[in-house]
Length: 416
Image (cartoon, rainbow, N blue to C red):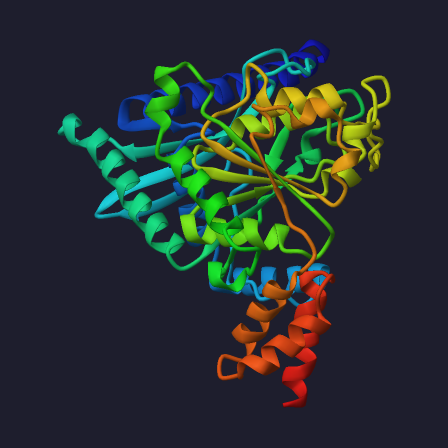
């Protein structure tokens, strides 16, 4: 009896383990035999299209409203045209499309040992699958038809909105031992904002068009770069006093060119060189990357031995080194096809290594408003005004920032 009482729990445990193993094996074989899948990896256009599709179809309207209220509480009163949600890791989303039963799985793939912080680390990707039908030749074609469908939806939506994504380290999967791993993930909420017209950004004569022409030439000449074995990247530094239209110009350019904007905060909590490098590797082609106020980040003025401190939130302190930033911008593993914008209020604070060609290819000065700029801003606010009123206003609002001129115009509009 004593022996039986000891063996019974052991046998029961072994039986449970066997059932668990067989269930997993049967599930694996079922999916292998009766589903067709393709992997959609980061830094591809299809990844962005699928992320956008999930953003719009994997959350109910009630959930969207709740998210809007939450973000309004955190970020204040903002006009969020649409808020999206991305499924959690290993969450499988089933759906029907054109009579086919399909699914999307968001997973993380580790290419190296998980305790290492080298390039590769781990990253998210999507698995797009469909239940296998008798005619196997049609299964894969349906998947690619679906990708064409979500591409059409994405392109059509980008005509009406500009997608802005905020970079953030994925601290949920970090711990005290692995806080410097390349485990970053784009912030799961991204917003669609109404496009900003180029005519709303008033700059010195020729500046806006020169910048746009340069971006358009770059985007249209990928083969030219490839033939000459030049990395297909372009970097711009917008510098000048605060409130002179640097960020506004970036957003207006993105709206005009129908490009998404990826914003990276170099002082984000738990940011590290490995995480920053991984972020850049995941940015798809034909996208704008914005690093605002790089002079205020501290990264560009510290040595490699003194990384920028970051809040710990219970984890080991992290930071970005100057060499880590340079390697992310144009290192061997840096991605291609992106348009990089760096903005600063104090160009003199930036180290020359950051400003060399290949990292910053063109520089544009956004200076205080001249008389001609102030006049154009007045005429845009008051199209029916006479020339004398515009001239008088411009003389009184020369040598100040564009934001100050705009505030003066708002005050005048309220009076009238």
